[in-house]
Image (cartoon, rainbow over all chains, first blue to last red):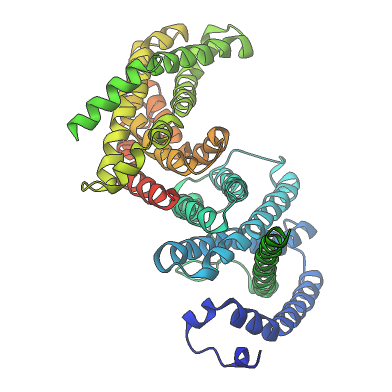
Length: 253
Length: 219
């Protein structure tokens, strides 16, 4: 295994799963440690800073809700980029990446929906409204689940990857709709207040913990994503070796 | 291409009256609604356009899995993949034939259902117009799902789950254009033009993605 420790110079070098696994083994502890550190700082800041004068303590839901909502969109974007990788370059790791990102994206979308609902009850007086932002995120959740189901329905991994890649790319239409839904339709959900051309519209007091939590959640996403990719590669190797063993056994028997 | 269009049309008309079953399903769905919400005519005339649209959407999904399945079964799909004409064009023509055979009857049947729903003349006209313009988009989106389903042993239900979320924008603008025509202070044209744009957009994206999926699912 000595050649696997060669440095990875090009992106295409990662196409070798063994090299990818070696890289993962090296950087995973660091990523996990970084994630934990960010969460410690972020959670400390989230709990010690002032509550909002209007919303009181419930404003702290924002520190989970907003990063989860960002990541629900980022997860789909990663899947779309991987889908391009699958269809255009046939990069062997692209379909592994897309498959690993789907459950993560679905989970973060669910977190965003649930925390939003918990936040909406005291603020808006209702658990759920058919507002443009809420509805489009809910549709995103359904799309994640549909894509997971599609991927599971096809036995052969490479075929499943290519077929889902097409559908992932078509579904990407929804992402700009989610992003701009609050600007296009003026409904209950507030409009964008952090990523704006004229600078963030929220107080630095709230922005600081929010950004730290966003970094923490993003680090968590990538850590889990890489771990899921590693597991998927291992799973495929086990399947391949089982097939080989079965073939050998049938030849002998 | 004209030959393919005519072939698909005759096939779908003769194969057990696919169009008729779609219209029948449409009728049944819409007829069930008053039992659910009660026979209040004022309420029905208010939600009528939405009901007709949802019924048409569900009926359009019904025949989708047949779009490529039969060709796959008798092997002519492989011939289409191999022929000289671009696959995208073939898919586009097949979509058009499918639309004429299954969605156009729905559009024609919609005024009758509008009468059942106690809708006014303007509402009926607007619903019919928006359906005429919007239903091709549903067919084009559905073609992607149908192409994906070819790879699956029994993909019918999964296709509906995958396709329905993507058709929501069409539904939103179709219904809002109808409402704008009937009552609203908001003008009819902006949502209607967005509906047209959606149909044109998916006329480009849908066949291209479906062709890509078909190429990738063929062994």
